[in-house]
Image (cartoon, rainbow, N blue to C red):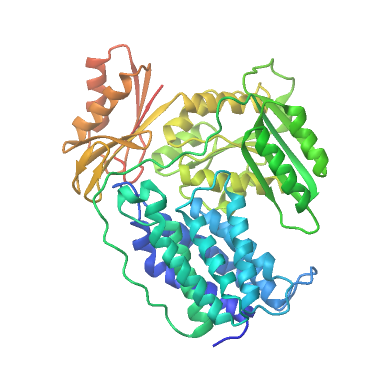
Length: 537
């Protein structure tokens, strides 16, 4: 048994945690509230920790000038690697957990039980800070429970504290369906929380030499799926205010409370430097002056940007001089070719923060718009945008959730407009494009549209199951009818890699008969899992 967490133990924890995540990867991927075949939380966590392990391969004998200990330096390398390799929401939150942990242990001479408790509390704080609207019953709840148990243990015995934290995390994970209705209705526990439990068990094994024994997860129940709440700002605020801020953490905490009372969509992320760090501040408000004054009260705000959502001012002269580019995430050869033809830099699906950041930098432009095309990739794109500020690049993320929305956004791009106005126009075009996905059910489930069996054809509109059937062509035609019933002039069809020959031709012919005044564009998308993606504008 180990008395302290040294640099070697950190490296063994990372390697052991990665190996454990790989063993549980499929199980975690299956913890999905939808009966569709693209659950990937386990895969994202594996890729995130793989990047952390690669960072730890650096020379640990060379300590930075900051005065970090060897174990602190190792922890920071692990956290930085996780940040650059983070994929999906859970990967991004995990990177913040590791960063909070690393910041707490960096300078302490030795990490024993009480120091581990402090580190887990710092990890919890960092995780909650990273999420604009924290939701209980998730990874956040699990890490918070681990920190609380570690603090209650109140001992310098490192192994006792680690065991208490891992045990409490497992118990909190078992309770997540009671806290989040989406999990209860799907009959699963939180996938990200499960991944954190695996990592904490790996830490216990490194410290004690004993493998944790956990009860097997309850079998998945066939219950209705639910749509998770989406973190979007309300329409009652007219201005977006963004600025960089040099200020101490204490002042930023007070500013955060002020801004939270003024508006919504508040995001405040720092670089972790002490005592005065650099912070990226974003908020939607009605009182711009009060928002900026809050920044002035906290420290030195600069690069202040204010956008009035309703404005469409006249084009400013010479916008091309600033250099602009678009970076688009694409899964499927055909989809990638469509985006490339629009002049966009294409990044393969499910990218890491580092991969997106590399694409942004390689675009060689001062202003870059990123189209993530997936809800999970939105968090990765936002983190990459924050990192890009370090290089003097302004990045705006248009929250597209489907390639058809990105095509709509790129169609209205206009370099003669101010960059901020162009981003607004692209976001409006994407938001006006309703999207649907057609796939085959991967498991038995009771959805909001009724029960389904493995192999059934599902049509999801805006992420929610709307239709269930057995004939692919019939369901594709029916979902287009349902979407056009709400209005529309243009239908975009993207055929997947497994789409049968003639699928888009059949849907096009159906639209011509039923909706003769609607224009249809069909392309070979080549995307996996989904034989057809549909967009209606």
